Structure formats: structure tokens, C-alpha cells
Length: 284
Image (cartoon, rainbow, N blue to C red; front, side, top):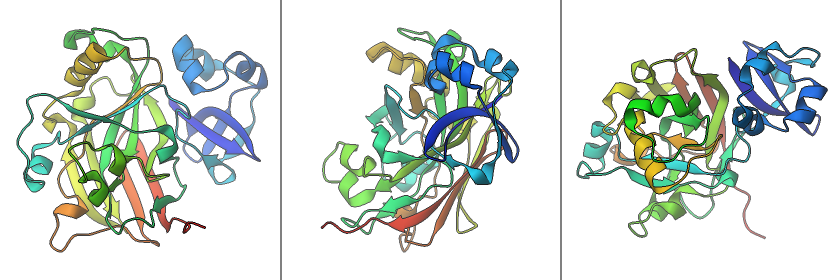
């Protein structure tokens, strides 16, 4: 299944995507489960697939929002592919490098990401994101994938100079609408083994990053084991697993995103997340 969240005529909704069409959950279903986070928490994705009576839209009629509009946690993992570790001049970490993103820093598929007026160093990072399916605490890696609801594409837009102000990544990773998530969550019945997935980042149609999920330093089961040890993971929580080599900051000369650019993250079997770049409005 491919689960999507959207806005239609200023009203939020969710449903199932089938190519260029989206079937919204029926009004009765949405009365019971307010959003996809509630659907996942209740474990009723199959019931949603069998739901009838909802409107059918073409994708062009909708504004897509992050597939989980209000997650309890967005945990992101840095320097988790060896080529990216090498290009950034870092050492292979002994433990996952985890930082947080705030929900307001993300937009949905097709929506503009914003280059902040505070910096010229707006960088792209394509990633695979994991959506947690049920409450998880002290999970062992052998059972970790049992706690996953699905996977989606993630653009961890980074403001590099702000990221480097200190050893903490948080400021450079949380500018308003600097990242994106979508276009859908693909449920685990379609992806039983995420390690076979590949990821490609395009900027204006040019390949900038390419990587295999199998090359993660800390794989998805290891990340779930680690994160569920220091925090209780809840349904709808997001873990962004890291980015391959090829980021703009590591190029000579550096490649920074500008207004008018388009960034696309493609993971075959998961989707293609596409976002145009705009300049943030200047402060009043």
C-alpha cells in the first residue's frame, strides 16, 4: 500500500495512492482515525485499503503534506554512509550520530523548500526514512523490522554554515521548510527487506548522489535498536537513515541550492520525492 496525506480545498485528508490517483479515506473512516498517524497506531492499514466511499482525486488536484503531518519524533542519522563520511572528513563513528528535526522544518511532495535568507549554503541530502508502526522500547535488532510500518523518501536539507556553528547539528537542520518527506509511505508488505533499496538524488535532472541502503554503517535494525534504547518510539515516528556521498558541500566548487532549482529523491519501489527551491521571504 501507498499511504498519502494531503490538503484538498483547504481541508486535510489522507488515503491511498495509485499512480496518478488518490483515493481518500471515507468520512466515516476519518471520523474514527483523524490522520495517518492514528491509522498506523491502530494498525488498521488493511482496513483502510478495504474502505470504500471516499472521493477519488487526481494528484494534480491535491497539495501533499509530509506523510505523517505531526509525528512525535523525527530522528535523523548523520554520517552513516562511508563515502559521505570520507567526503566530509570525518571518522567512522562508534555509535549512530543522531539529531532531531522539527515537523515545521518539512514540507510534502511537490511543495517548495526554502533557501533561508540567513545563508547561501543550502545543501541537499537524499535519504530513506523509516516510519515506526508500533510502540517500541528496548527492541533487539533481530526483531526490529517487526516495528516498522513502512518507508518513504526524505530530503534532509542542510544549512551547512549553521550546522557547523557548534558540534551540535540542530540549527542547520531545522530552518523553516528546508526539508521534505514523501510522496507516500510504502508499507512493509511491499518492501520486506529494505537493504536491497537504492537511492539517487537529482538536482535539476543531474545525478548528484547515488547509494545503496546495504552500505549503511548502521543498518535499519541497528538504528531501531539504538534509538529505542534511549527513547520510546511511537507509531508514526520517523527515523531518517543518512545520506550517501555526493552532497553539495563536498564538491569543488561547492554546489548550493538556489531559487529555481528542483531537487528529486528517487528510491525505486518507494517513490520519487520532488521539490522546487524558493528563496525564503526576507524578514520585515
